[in-house]
Image 1 (cartoon, rainbow, N blue to C red):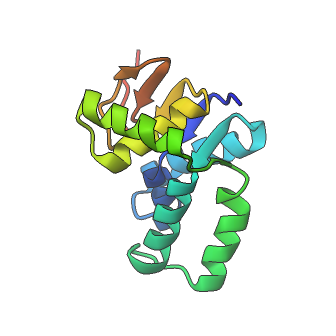
Image 2: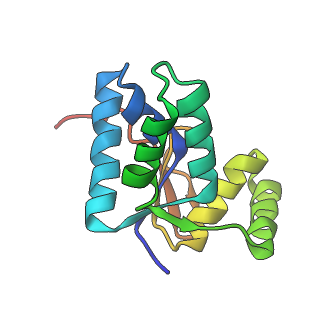
Length: 145
């Protein structure tokens, strides 16, 4: 399997909360484009983190029914990476090599397993390359020319 982009949990949270309109617009554009083009994915971990956050912690909490609809409409079309022993081993290797947290290491491992070229996340170092993967913080302002 190979898809171009991996979307981290924080983008889904910004899409839902909409407190920061600019971030919500960017997140929505990346997520919608990924679903429509079929060129993005997420892992089981992103689904778990997202559902936990939107039901329990988000500024604008969703009801169980709304969370279920979000799962169907936004998360399930992108879900492609599931756990395995080799997946966890790769996560541990990434954690050891790059000194990321265990959960960030699993996100990177999932993106690599999917063959992604870009990992959209604001939690890791923008521009860092790990194998074929480049971490991109889509919320960093780019200079205009």
